[in-house]
Amino acid sequence: MNKYTEDFKKKLNKGGYKITNQRKVIYDVLMKSIGEHLNPEEIYELVREVDSDIGIATVYRTTKLFEEVGILSKVLFNDGCARYEVVLSEDESHGHHHLLCKNCGKIIEVKIDLLNELEELIEKEYDFEIHTHSLKFYGLCKNCKEEEINGS
Ligand SMILES: [Zn+2]
Ligand SMILES: [Zn+2]
Ligand SMILES: [Zn+2]
Image (cartoon, rainbow, N blue to C red; front, side):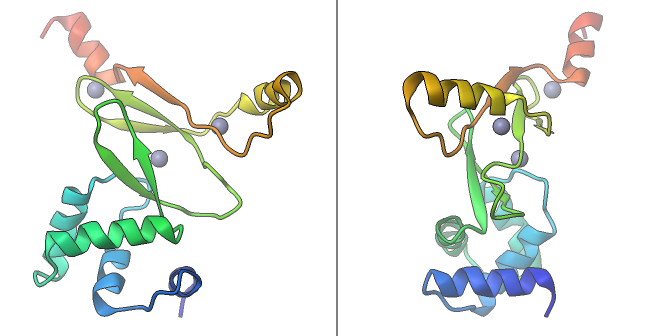
């Protein structure tokens, strides 16, 4: 059993769930999409290639369950579409921030995080205990910016 499978088992058991074949298939698909931000329909498309017996309702149910036990984390953008990404480490409450291109919908991950200082400031100023923060930037990606300049 590799590290990922152990983690999978541990998280499911903690939530009181068992490993089923379908959950395993969906989990494997997600593990191959690390770093991507997929909505349930896109997850379903990938799952269907592996096991066509798994319906979209099962995928919806399973992504919710995976979110509950901390395998997936939901990323919400202004477009109202819920996307999921794999949680890689438990102590990282939010591994990174996101840039969303308003033109092509591309999502870019940003690892730069200068918010720890701001958090300290806010905690002092407002006597508020911060557990996490989420930050999204909306704009145009490199390609779309160039297209705009070229007027095509
Ligand atoms: Zn773009
Ligand atoms: Zn991400
Ligand atoms: Zn941050």
